Structure formats: structure tokens, C-alpha cells
Image 1 (cartoon, one colour):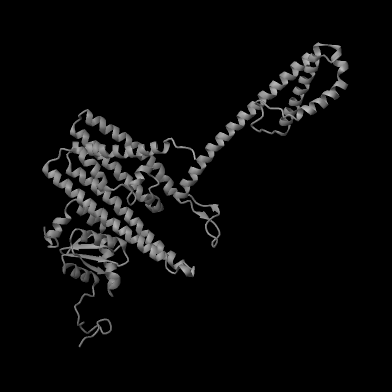
Image 2 (cartoon, chains in turn green, cyan):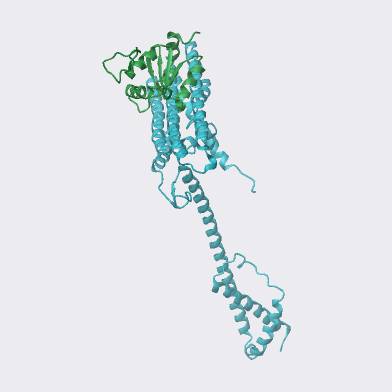
Amino acid sequence: MHYQVDSWGYYMPARSMGSDPMERVAKLASESAVVIFSLSSCCMCHAVKRLFCGLGVNPTVYELDQDPRGKDMETALMRLLGNSQAVPVVFIGGKLIGAMDRVMASHINGTLVPLLKEAGALWL
Amino acid sequence: MNSPSTELTRRMAIYEQFHHISRWGDAFNGDTSPNTGTSTIVPADVSLKNKAEYISCEQVEPSISDQETNKPNDKIQRRLAQNREAARKSRLRKKAYVQQLESSRLKLAQLEQELERARQQGIYIIGASDTGCFGLPGTVNSGITAFEMEYTHWVEEQNRQICELRTALQAHVTDIELRILVESGLNHYCNLFRMKADAAKADVFYLISGIWRTSAERFFHWIGGFRPSEVLNVVVPQIEPLTDQQHLEVCNLRQSSQQAEDALSQGVDKLQQSLAEGVATDLCSGNYRAQMVDAIDKLEALENFVSQADHLRQQTLQQMVRILTTRQAARGFLAMGEYFHRLRALSSLWAARPRESA
């Protein structure tokens, strides 16, 4: 039998815990080599997706506006980045890389591609 | 009594008198038609009038003219002098008028330029709410005005630095001194990006339009400024020879800046598309309040793109300095500075080139 945790607190939820949005973010981030949290309406998110596709990487994208728990995750990411903008945010190999500026800086200084290779997202 | 010579003299006197009167008429109503003052051609029908006057004068004058032969001469001389004086005054008036016209023309051209600038700076005109936006002038965008002034100083300082670099490289100064110049160069660009960040908060469209740069520079304009990969293309041939390691790193830098530029360009394209779609919703209903609110949000995203583009420019320059030796980096900054200086000079030449009048 499956019960909801918010109605009757003393019942264990049947699904995985994941009620802490930050935990959920970390969990999702570790499940793929390259993970991008995004909003479908955000054009900067589109730019970061195009950047990775241009490198030949196939990132896993989570559109937070299409996720029922997206709002909470957005808030958690905002706190994590210390920024009013939650997205786009990129994780490689489960580790936080950062927002667009960090991604671009690491690409320009040559550290992004080795990270991608290390995470198994790029072979060459 | 009426000998040919006196008749001629009388005719001349009346001729002069007629002209003298017309001059006075001009002076009276302040008519400054430019054609007076130079040679005036007497129309043919006036001669009939002259004859009439001549006849009437003849009735009046004979007793006077017969008394002293000197008097007509004096009168003639006096009239001639007065005529000359009037003609001179007329010429002066004409000159003054023409000068006034010239300066007004210049002033008009200046005002038109100012107006164009002001329009592009975004002088917000406050007017009636429904009828649109044309009314009394509103607030001037001080953030943009401040940027314009600062940018003028920035260019002057840039030109000074270019000269300093050129002198230093030709004089073969020590690496330490070159290092200082390279750091100043890098710092100077960082200052520009900081200035632009403030200007973007005032009006991002001002930066996007490139109106703050010269026309040739504007031809290459990309998201509010220069394209990093383009600068690398200009600079790299000027700093050869490079070691193999440097060659590789420079290649990587060129490639990664190009890739980053492409990504940002695609983001801006998506923003344009999204904005156009948003604004164009329900065009036939004529009601656009909701669309405007949505559009404002989208436009704010544009500030983010300009910020990222400037960030990319800064990162590219910093990486370039990292890859290169001090001397190479100095040559690089000199090349870059000289390149933009030439584009600015080209813009001036282009604007000043002789054109055929329409």
C-alpha cells in the first residue's frame, strides 16, 4: 500500500525520499555524465545546451518548469549558486560546474574538455 | 537752353535719383533681398517714368540750374556718393545675411545630429497615455550620457597606450616593463567591460545597437562589442613565431571562443524568435498589455547575453595573455589596439569622403 507522506506524516512514503529538493538535484546530477538544469523558456539555457551539443556531448536536460517539484529545485539551486538566476546550471560527473559564465570560462581556459573526457561524455 | 550735355546730365541726375529713392525704400522696410547692392538693371519701362519726371523737373528746376553751372555737378557728385554709400551698405547687409544663413545651416546640422543621438540614447518622451509617445521631452538617460563621456576618455587612453607599447617594443625595453604595459592593457579592457555593465543596466539596446562605436567598427559588431575570435584572427599572425605548444593552445583558444560565440548567437536568435512570437500574439485583437509584460521579461534576458558576451571577451583576452610570452602579449595588445584604431580612422575617412551632390 502506498500512502502520501504529507497527509499522514507517520506513514512511510512508498517512493524514494527525494522530498528535499537539494537532495533530488544531487541525485539527478549524479545519474548522468553531463546534467543541465534548465527552463524551457530560458534562452541562456538554450545557449548552454547548444554549446554542449556543438562539442559533441549529449547532455541530460531537466526542464524544471515541466517538473512538479521544479519550483523547489529552482529555489534550492538559487541558494546553491547564490544567484537570483537558478538556471542554466551544469553538473559534470556529478560535480557542480556552475552557471553559464563558469562553463564558458572553463571552456576558454581549456579545462572543460578534459573534465568531459574524464566523465566519459567525450571520447577523442 | 537744353544743350545735349545738360540734357544728358539731367537725365543722369534723375536716373541716379530714381535709384537713390529705391535704395532708401529698401532701407525703410529692411528688405534684405540678396540681389540688391550689386549692379541693378533698370527695367525698360522705367525710362518712361524718367521722362515724365524729367519733364516735371524741368518745370521746377530750370531757374536753379541756370544760375550756377557748378551746382548740378555738386548735386551729381553728392548723389553719386550717396549711391555708392547705399550700395556699400547694401553689400554689407547681404554679407551679414549670408553669414547668418551659413551659421544657421551649421547649427541645424548639429541639432539634427544631436537629435539623432538623443533618439538612439532613448530620450523617453512623456505624452498622453493612449495616443502614443510624442509630447514633451522627458528624462535623459544619464547612465548612457555618463558612458558616452567615459568611453571617449577610454579611447583617448587606449590610443596613448598603443603609442607607449609601440615605443617600448621598438626600444627593446626589459620584460618587466613590458609586463607592466601588458597588465595595463588588460586592465584597460576590464575597465571597458565594467563601464559597459553599468551602461547595460541603463539601456541594453544602446550597447546592442553599437551606436557608441564608429561605423566601420559597427560593421563587425556582435552582441554589444567585438567578436573574440575575430580579434584572435587579427592578432595571431602578428605575434609569430610561436612554439609548438603555443600553436596548439592558440588553436584551442580560437576553436573554443568560436564555439562559445556560436552558442551565444544561437541563444540570442532564440530570444529574437521568442520575443517576436510573444509580441505577435493576438495582433487582431488590438489588446497588447499582457504581451508587453511578457516582452519586457524577455528583453531583460538580453542584458544577460550582453553580460556573457563581455565575459567571453574578457576570458579570451586573459587566456591569450596566459598562453603568450610577455613580449608576444605586448605585440598582441599593440596589434589589437592598432587594428581598432584603424577601423575608427576608416570610419572618419568614410564620413569625410567627397560625395556628389544630389
